[in-house]
Image (tube, rainbow, N blue to C red; front, side, top):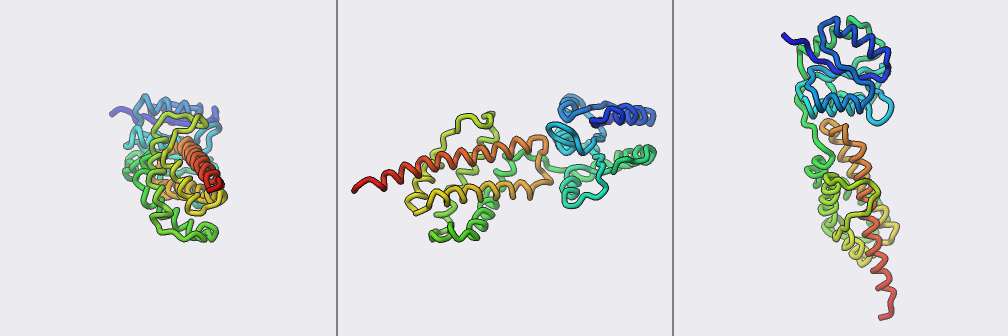
Length: 276
């Protein structure tokens, strides 16, 4: 039987050297990586049976990024994180949704090897559906809109203008479709905005409905909160290897749409100010 292939990820050179030697002596075929980027390259080009990664890594990404990438590329692999913090609160629950086990450093080497073998024998805790940020937003469109509406209802300034649910939220399905399209495109952050007819129309409509500029901004802020709430509720499925760029893209696109809406809002204001 071929030795189990194990990817060891740790920025500490001493740990990589010593633990790598020990694991090889216990029959593992060990590949080491010093950074998240290096680990991702190995994951994309090789198949592994076990991932053993430090949770806290310097630079872009961390152990969760590596775990998420491994889940996506090789869902049958066992994933184990090493952490220096023995007491983790709410974050631990989110982490456990992504990885099979968390072990606390420093740990007796014999116990570590035994823990790896036991987890390898048991296999991954359960199959997980790993999704992109775009896929999560696409399937959660209705719940995101409902969450947005509940938050809007708590804002007295926005509710001062009476509207039906459709009048208040009718623009959001297209906004979310635009967000999904942007997330799936290769458009870089901060580049020239994609034209959105829906955003332009929204600005004109809100002006006619009596919204102030401050109300437009507040409505947009609540949208970002609702979108991020949706991602928070889907931590068990989210692909952590791309979540940061996804969140930044969402913020960029929502601001872009607000900018376009405000342009049409101001244009409508000028028209309103003209003599009849």
